[in-house]
Image (cartoon, rainbow, N blue to C red; front, side):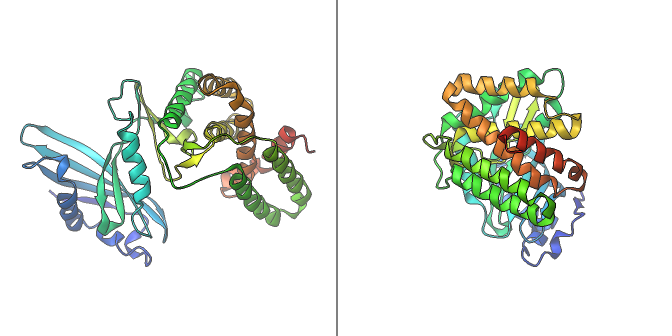
Length: 340
């Protein structure tokens, strides 16, 4: 059977990632799958490659490729699965795969009783600088939170991230409030260069963020997601999947919820016309997280929410469809920080 290959990016021509040409070559891929992923089939089973799709690509840095497979086992019916392969310029990202494995085995399997899971880690292909996970099906929370069940879903998401914090998988990476503020200074300085008319306003926002950071206590660090926002949650019936642990590190758990809330506020402004359009959803998420983690968490959640909205000032300049909202985000930060 022929293998469909879809690559609209032309990744095989990347001079910094020459291995991508092999990663989309059906013969090469079939050989590597048989070599490294035999646990999927057992001793006498077969893995048959059916399709290859390049779905995301950042030139000379990283690439996401989907592989459709037919899995044949002698003692079961054939199964069709899709694997996501994550490749990057440097050596394979062993850390992220390691964290995913540890979480999978710490109560986040696909059959966990609480319905909270991570994608199943499948294996690695060193020749492609790639590790693979099973693709999960479902709908991202970005689409579901504005709907009628958004409040209940928000509470479940708070429970999911709290579960991850409680797993507390150790990491050699650290992220402090100082690091968060450094990123904010770097990003907003770029906005100031692009928009000189806002220099003074941006400076006042940064000064106010620095003051907020200085008065926000830092708790003991725990394992956190660090890139937690609605697109990182997929809902499939009663099961909720947490995705993408590329930035997993040790930090303040309040960052994850604050970041998520900041993204909801930005989404509300951009898609529903008001930053408060999903306030009930945000409040439900914050309240449930505070119930689980303690009332002392609430001020830190709000601080990180403010930092996230401020960071969205920069992010809005990076997408043409979001640029009309840049000044409104600027105003929103001024309101939250009382720095007009």
